[in-house]
Image 1 (cartoon, rainbow, N blue to C red):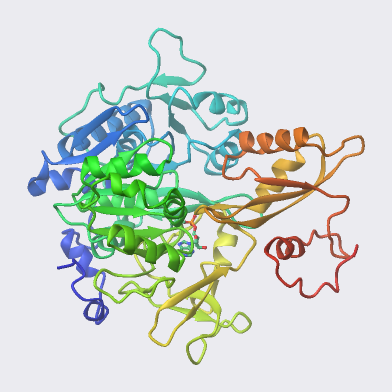
Image 2: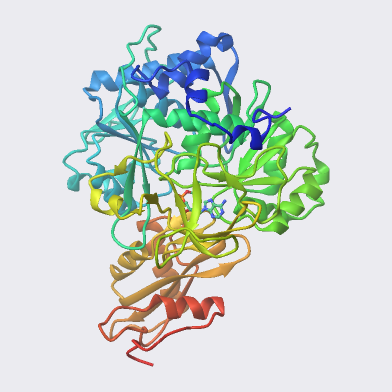
Length: 567
Ligand code: WT7
């Protein structure tokens, strides 16, 4: 029996009060995600249940029960409060997938501060635009990532504390640095949790758009109502599950379902903090008897590429339910997973802004491989005609995905960027920026994004950010960044570059520029290919026409080029 029981029954008269009741939350009362994910689970009698089982890249292991999660996050809260961190101050988490990241997340929320998770592979340029926009007060990080922060502190007067979780006691600390050993800190048993309310801000995730700097997506504590129930009904989390969400909490899947959805449902979750290899992943599943596995199409395609033979070396019989998110899950991957694991990966669709799963396949519902499924109960979704912003009369037409605002985990704004936030709405609909069609049975079929944002391996990369980074390289005169097809990552970043006088394109320069972007931004944003060209296609008004370069990479029709200047 699945938690959702029956999708068709659940969508009738659905009300979010179902979730509020299960969580014992009364509208108007205090709601604090940190408390719900640790203290409450202990109160429900699971204090000694393993909450987090962590494995590092050297095979080392750490375990935390729900009571340890509660106490250690109390310790984090106490430490931050002693530093003078105030409710609604932004506290950035800049760490690998180590236990401190998961526990720190709950600790920051417990004092009513806003948690700002940032992917630990980010370079100094990626870091500064996000910390600067959020005017972040404190950053919790590891020794190995601290130099990237130190490089930019002069430009960040707001950043008062750089908290190092693994400081070397024999070495002096740097400017604004403070050491904090989470496991061995004071852990108050009775900790006064800040009385956050439904609309109190909780998490600030940064996401990339086509133009302009990344946007800070502001979420509130009430998002729990969506995250708890979607984790329960879609991921089907049960008390007996051993759950593995492969996402990094630097991105929204890793927080909404790698922390909040998992712990609020009181399951045991495993975290693997090491690089990808098929063998290592299967070993991890076998060792921990993983039963629910939430992953991403790029990972699934990498596993497909590794072949079926390696699977036979492991006992994967513990797996009972699989789901995927982040990019289109092609039907081949669904069919393959059914063949090799005996279970299909269920595709789920959502984004940083929506905070929780919007459109999905549900346990027990008929799956159409290649389709994203149907809207979650309580979610009204459709596709709109891109010209009129009106829904189509019948099924089958491709349009803009549109969702009726009002679900609990919807973003509340873009941080200090209300104008861009307002642009996401038309005729009373929220537009996520994707295109899809709906078939006669109500299933959504993803078509593509409605902007130039590149989705590489499930991570959004802004061509604007990469182009800006490229322009800082001394050899680069102009650049245009588009995606190109890739079997594993679906698409990867490709840069077209014109060089300044005196520079000549070469393999060495190619590698140098790639590395330059990797260090400044991140490995994801690094172009996988650089093509040196003499002129970029431009409109008569001088705007670079990425559309033409994109079409060339994808072997598509170029379309209307009447505004093209240099053809
Ligand atoms: C964008 C959101 C939410 C988790 C991770 C990504 C694309 C997401 C699917 C899917 C096709 C998908 C969309 C979306 N996307 N899920 N199942 N099928 N595309 O969060 O970084 O905010 O990216 O990822 O384009 O808008 P994100």
